[in-house]
Length: 253
Image 1 (cartoon, helix red, strand yellow):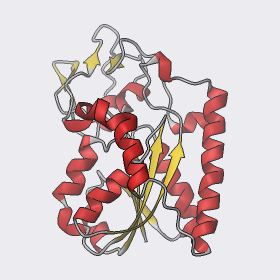
Image 2: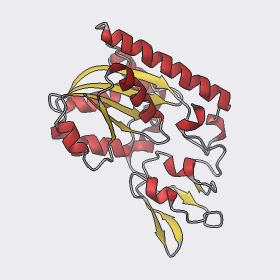
Image 3: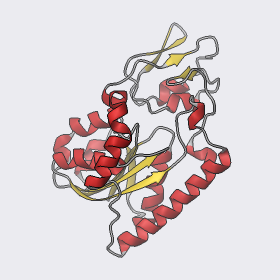
């Protein structure tokens, strides 16, 4: 069994690692950016795929990954874990449908509410105590799901027509353009930036670069929020005008 994930601030990675530590501790876990990910997928028939939902949709980078390697999914048995800050509807289902189009067999899905990664929107921030509670609740839900699976009952969250309609009318119809393309809206405050290079190193799209001792953003941002949540000077923003609170999964464990 193989675990693969796309994660911004670590929620989806942590969820996957927690799930597999209970379900199959021999399974290996890799990010989709891993240079050997194709060979890992080829050599495993069963896959647990974990990712973070954006506006009830699949992040652009993940869509491109699934489409680019469409020949890899045929015949694979895949369980989808979707993490979300608010409401998804069919978070697991929307990725499941894309994988099924390329021949994958979807065996189930699981939805987990986790701390929101959007650090520059005050309306989306919760007290630290609440986020700690969310993570603990997610851990308990994972435990229940694993026990159900071991007893032959596969969770089907996000899979099916009703979930599809909930995701479509809940957010996706209204925010479809948010994830249709990569964005060029990343802003770097050069007055605050100390050019430490952390954002450049962690960006999965290589959208941030250092030129003439200045960090510059391109037009290929997939909105994972890694750079914004790890910048030591809070010098990077995307949807909002300033950073309200940074947070990675380690903050809530």
